[in-house]
Image 1 (cartoon, rainbow, N blue to C red):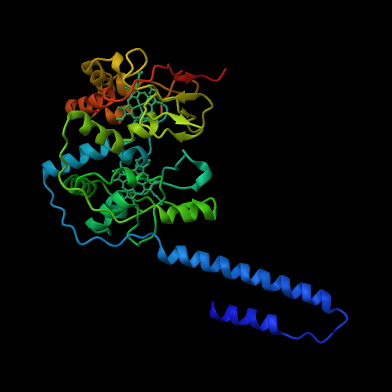
Image 2 (tube, rainbow, N blue to C red; image 1 turned 60 degrees about the vertical axis):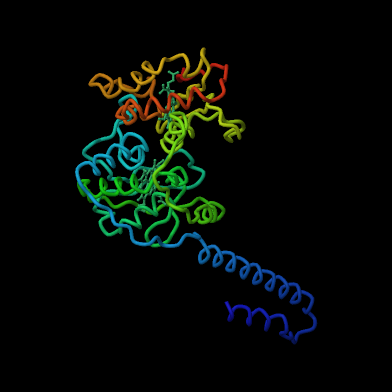
Length: 350
Ligand code: HEC
Ligand code: HEC
């Protein structure tokens, strides 16, 4: 940096002997100076974001205990509630709801498809083959604050901002479970942001957060709201206007998905409290049963080849949620405003 700026100054003060072409030389010299100053500005910009961000400090050591019930809690949460493996495991898109390919649990290397304009990113390997060298605190920081163990940022396709409220005990349980996965040798390519703007945004969204203690919820609906946020229901079913989620929490659906390699469009359903078009047309029992069907033998094997109804919703994963958690989500949905508008869920290619 210092060398470059000294060089720039000596260029400005440099005398040019040949007077005839002095005007041309002056122009050239000014252009050079402008180019150098611009180069300096870019270098400064890069160094600033590279060294000052992500603004997240290391966590103090965390000790994760492990026993059968802790591992089971971690398995339940990461597979059926927070659906970590929707991204971190290859899935079979020829079946409805695209169930996980179980022999590949946690192998990663799934290309992220929802925002190709951000660049090319892959989910990482969550088996001990990769995370074996991470400390418990490093894994917990990655989950809740979106930072790699080396301090570099994770792409926001890893939705850490949804996981900020997960109580520490549940985070520990998920780490205990990840440690029990079968190690799968699978190297994952590094992600590539599409522009400097994305590169910068990837570094600046993280912040130090206070890990949550045991949560107290005043009602079942309030607990359901927490599950629906951390379980991604809201991000898909929120009503979008001009590509942006509405500022009010309105789950009228309608967001269009085009699945990888397909041309048909599937839109998120209206799951607001509306009695005609939304979740309130189900009783709580029916709502829970609609999920549970996808845990049955038939429900896991519904063919959905190209050209037939498929969905981005991971029914087969959520189907493992227990009745009281699904019931709490139902209570939350019914506490929201009603959106009295139908959604055309499926448009086949004609
Ligand atoms: C919507 C997709 C998605 C979901 C859901 C998701 N992840 Fe990720 N995760 C990613 C992507 C993509 C990366 C890699 C980001 C990058 O390359 O910068 C990642 C990175 C990570 C990392 C860092 C590992 C490394 O080697 O860099 C950990 C740990 C992790 N995820 C754990 C989890 C856990 C635990 C959950 C559930 C609580 C979860 N993820 C849910 C997409 C997801
Ligand atoms: C990745 C996006 C996505 C996520 C995450 C998601 N959904 Fe969906 N959901 C959809 C789409 C698209 C449909 C319509 C196609 C279908 O039936 O699968 C749908 C359908 C539904 C339906 C059926 C509604 C009806 O009218 O029959 C219910 C109920 C539902 N979702 C609830 C939820 C809940 C609760 C969660 C969180 C636990 C959730 N969804 C998470 C995309 C998503």
